[in-house]
View 1 (cartoon, rainbow, N blue to C red):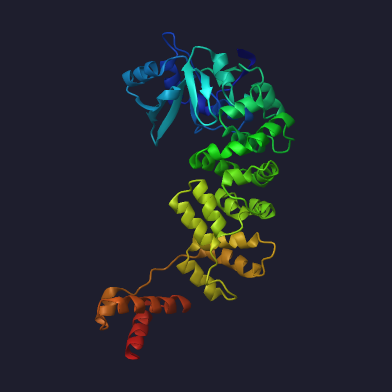
View 2 (cartoon, rainbow, N blue to C red):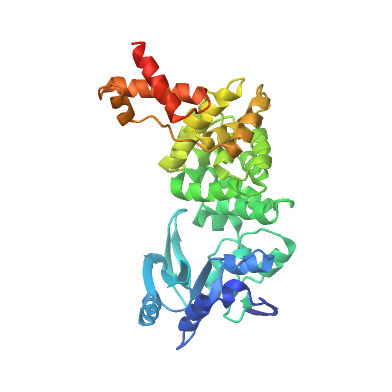
Length: 413
């Protein structure tokens, strides 16, 4: 039903020409289309922007949606046909925007990971299959709001994060809703107590979390770890005994260290590293969450002790040069969150040095070494490494000084 007292006041994402064009194409000849979910919710909360992603629900079938888009010259991707989802690609002046358009549907069968759906014309049924009341709000092209559950607007007003209907039933339909519940609660209502029914339901679902794919777990966990209240969220999840099944590891998770990191950095990967005891544990967690090779390499570098950091700045400079600025910065943040850290002063120096460090290019090359009389081979590689270490320790002297050092070493045999 439309709420006569609530109408969005021309949010930038709704008044964009591309949004209006898509809605206009779908809202003719018996079709009805409304924006739904996060874009509506975030507008009511005052946190939406012109770049907010727009999801659309419609009574048109996927085939009808595809046909209308293609006839208008809009690229249409069948990204989720089994669930009625078509992605429209709108090319703007600077970048392409994606609109997920999904046919109204009702769940026929669910197993906690997948759902079999039936398309419908029933907006009430479409709302009933969603997870949280605040995510079941719709709006027309003119901003008129529809609240089929009659709870979404009130829950936004009172900052209540609640499931639609029975919490245990909604969670059993898709266990990822456990993480979505924590994410929205600690994003929108972190200062409020979690309602008892929802808390009991999410705690009871812990045994089923291992059914979820690592990619889905990763997506939600990194979003939770990026929240300002990330440490409070993980503490609540730990109390519900959810961290072990989510991370795939029984471990002594360091929540006080995470709380300290929460104040230092909003980087979700750094926060994840802070809560883990060591690199072997991080490796298991990273594999369980299907982290990319790039993220795994970053964790390994940050959680492996540097052989360069010591009591003097020369070693910090060597760490910045050989390990990289990002690695030193990560290691410094992790070390400064350690309650037992004995080298806080050195790590503070490392952070300061990292801010202004510009890695110079090593001036020695193969042509210079051959001109000095060296033959290509392993000896040349070993000499290059030795001279490079000297060059870094000496504070990056000039190419002429590097060449002189090379000749002196060769002369010594």
